[in-house]
Length: 381
Image 1: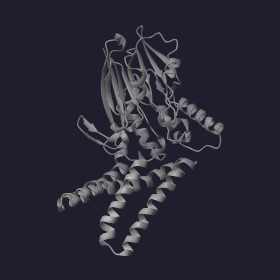
Image 2: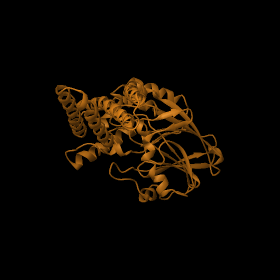
Image 3: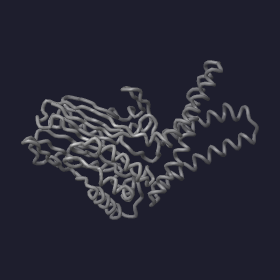
Image 4: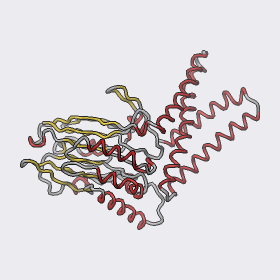
């Protein structure tokens, strides 16, 4: 998606250059504009390459901030281009003024998203009804969190600790984390170990791995180093109290009734979990009321269509693209262009899925409209 944003920004830059700079400015200004724009794109390409090569958690964050500044400029130019091009058809100054106004609004919106929006966490409360739910689990409360991407908080333990206090105050029966604890490195967890240990639920907390947790976004020296990194991350996740489900299930029992939590491995950046993962995960499982943890929401539609044993799937991954509009219960994001199920509760052929927009940020630490969230799900018969 970033690639297409930058590609579109190049088109916008060419439009601005030939329509305004080339026609109305002196040759020195033309050279300065062309040089600045060209250097900007080359710098972004070099920085993005550095993202895959660095071994430093803090460099990851710093790269994200620099990319965010450039993204603000690119988005502003792109919006100006989209609106201003209409002046070629309708000869009116109103459109030109609108183009400048929207470009400025886009820039300041991006700045807000970097400085404040990504910290503006909220709680979302959802009720999931299903007649197959055992009576003893009527009213059961699940805290669903996803996509922490801990490098995006630059080691700020205080903010994560405050969020943990908010989540603990919900007094959930169980916590389900649906992947992407980190963005690249296991060491992203280190500043937050004490805070994550304090995260608690009455009957335990369960986790799965997301695509970023497999180390696919870094150039490792060897396959052995990459595997060692993944093992270290698994160990750290377990050490903060999560029961890590790797194509496995756990049974929750209450007053003689049983509810199964089944967790799938995501399999990383270039691979997706398949039906074989589910067959491995629920092998020997006899409980007919099940909750599935799957990092990506695609699996729900592809492999669970009509499988009413899994009455609820919890997923994340989409981030709702971290940018969008939310007005009351209505929301929209360009995320829908890629994901048919991108945020919220969906129902299809007898089962449901909730897709969280997550808490952290990928690559660029920015959220506007699609602010971070944790979700409290109440199960009802």
